[in-house]
Image 1 (cartoon, protein in one colour):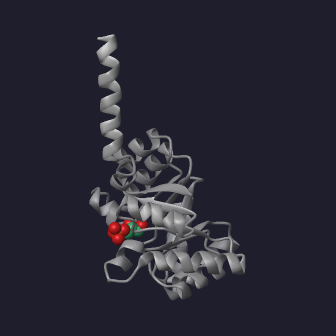
Image 2: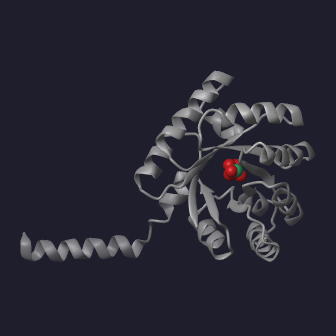
Image 3: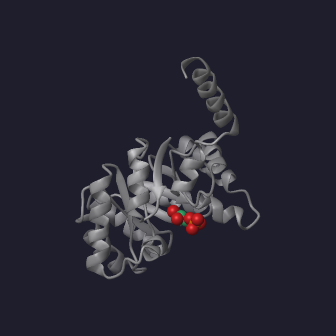
Length: 218
Ligand code: G3P
């Protein structure tokens, strides 16, 4: 399973990259706004800066919601760097735009996916990635992981090449469950990645090893 970081924060992206486990980055308009990035030129420069840190794919989301607007914006984003993947929402014009991007050789990430039906449509249109939002499904008292499991089964049966990118990941437990249920990629905040390092017995064990070493070595 590949690891993407879900942020527009350059410091967090660098930290995950330096850990040596980072395969890519996803962003969305909320994450860009959180970093205070506004205006077409600044947004473009920020994506370029992200693409200089990571060699893997970087998802850049369109703001337009009509076919023509999404195509224009997507082409502009794709021109910024070779590893840009255009993120397109799961709406009617979005599906149409994804199919068009396939024809002109631009890779896409279909976002805001909450059902297996939507996931089938995204794959059928030819999205490179599809992003089911696990945490937001959990927020509605449903089980987001059931969607990952169902999608993995359907994609395997149908031979779809679209990669399942588990998004809206909130904890290291989500990452483990996504791996068990067949996600190809998880995209998560730095806190969830660093959370995977933690176990109290690791800390206790290391403290003991070092104390024993000091007893005989000073
Ligand atoms: O990649 C989508 C993700 O950013 C949504 O996460 O935590 O806002 O539901 P969240």
